[in-house]
Amino acid sequence: MTTRFSDVSGRNIVLALAGVKLIIHLYANRGYGYFRDELYFFTCGDRLDWGYADHPPLVAVASAAGRSLFGDSLSGVRLLPAICGALLVVVAGAIAREMGGRRFAQALAAVSVIASPILLAQNNFLSMNAFEPLLWMTFALVVIRLIRGADPRWWLLAGAVAGIGMQNKYSMAFFGASVVGGLLLTPESRILVNRWAWAGAAIALLVWFPNVVWNVAHDWPILEILRNAGAGKNYEMSPLEFFTRQIVLGGPAAFPIWIAGIAYLIAGPRVRPYRALGISAILLFVILVLLRGKDYYFGPIFPMLFAAGAIAVEHAAERASLAWLRPVSLAGVVLSGIFLAPLVLPVLSVDRFIAYSEAIGLGHAKTENHEMGRLPQFYADMHGWEEMVGAVAQAWGTLSEEEKARAAIFTDNYGEAGAVDFLGPKYGLPKAISGHQNYWVWGPRGYTGDVMVTVGVDREDLEKYFASVEEAARVHCGDCMPYEDDSPVFVCRGIVAPLPEVWEVTKNWR
Image (cartoon, rainbow, N blue to C red):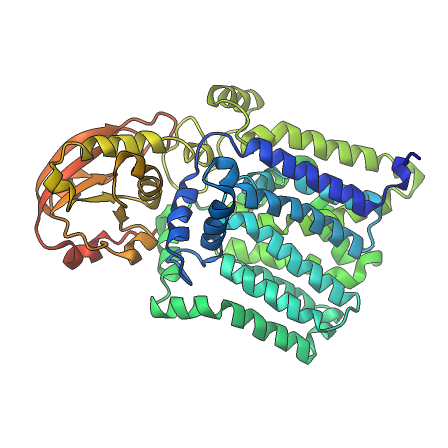
């Protein structure tokens, strides 16, 4: 007995598309090398705590669990993000279905998630950003069910998801505030007026509370880091530039879909109960612009907007004169996704990637104020770690056995330190220390600093604290970030004061 495509339910189509998303990442996540942040998160996973200077603990737990279950290979480390990407497709389809979307709307929402450049990129490596969209959209799905009249006790689940979201990334607060703000501005505020909504808020705080305690004990380091980033690290955009970047990040062909989704949520008569969600998107955009957030911070809300826009397309196409909207919108999203995928998935060699990006005329979008090489920062940060650790090992080899027993390896940033921690054991290197982000919190690890191998630190800075500073090697890493290439590795001796006494000056929170 054969099954016709017309008999396949929207739910089954979405499940099949989730499988496609997973297969894409299982193929693509083996490309290039470990990402800078992944190396840092490996060390965080080895030192589990309720918080870290620059992020909550969930990504560290995911790092430890993923490596324990699937190993240290690129594909093993990145399997959990890939699974989150597949689940996000399922949730996007469910959002469309809950808001009244039929088979086509569910499929278009799912395909839009698969093809979105920002979501392709974020589900392809280990970071908080891999889990963030799934948590945001699960929260949105629960709120939609509550709007539809579900038992108010669903607020307990919403609170749990929000709390886990706060343990992943603090931006969950911005999304939650936007959704609540949208509800308060519409008649759907009624779902907030019950004891279960307050109980859900209490659960969210309870789940997040251990991280709050950690932050209080450490004087809320994230606030200092954010201030420093806003004072020069992050690339500043105008509101217009922030908006235009969303066109590429969401996918050019999907741009009319998610814009239509916002408009349809706010003004569409068939989805009037969900007007609060359209307002929440506008509120979130305003919050991120005012806080000078990075362009990709808006990305986690795309699946909800894709779902709403897909419903708008489905409803419009009910008119015979607009029936063409279905195939055109679906084909456009698919072709756009294929066209842009090599820009966000490491599926081409470096030379072929550069030729491709030049051929299509898309330059490197900056998110931080660094000199750029021939690769965008996202890809450059997947290069050069083996070369860097090899140069450190070369310098380490110049030390006597007595010096090695007491020497420390100090790096300028957490990527370098994480690389030494992860790749260094095969060279016989000890764990690194650094003043960057949570490495500063971990402190000097008992080292006196009398003998130190450094990488990424300027000679003139070192000469303020050491009697002898000798260059012992250089990092040559080609397609890495320019500030990592040709970086000297120094052997320093004769520190002016014990390292624990001068540790404060190493603090590098940016």
